[in-house]
Image 1 (tube, helix red, strand yellow):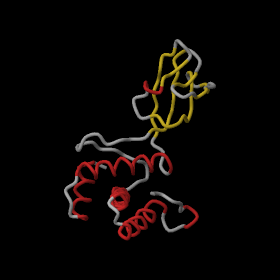
Image 2: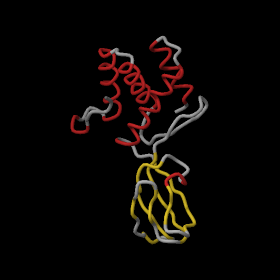
Image 3: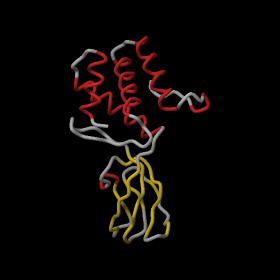
Image 4: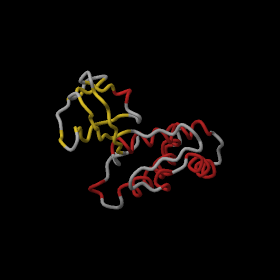
Length: 160
């Protein structure tokens, strides 16, 4: 998904030109989806000498750990407010992250998420923020149907 394409589609549907607000809505939807519904996963290797990895050292917006390894062996770790305690050595961390759109030309891939579904999420968020609650219900229904399918057991509150 390319941010400029998302902005173009949302602008055309709502007949607006508020690029900054659409970008904010897109990032809110990305955060929601990555935190709750579709994991975005990255792997990064660190040379640890002081038994810790600061979260700010991760290249992507760190959300949670999937695994911590030295070589092929899983190693223990502990999470703290600003860092992760790990053994010293060449440590590989597989982690979930929250993607964020920064530039119009930026493209982000979220596993198993269509661009159309994402557009519905942005439309929902924009409608809620703008106080268009009837429209928000319509877009939210389309978003949830695309995100979860028609099986009600997978449905849960997605956006506000």
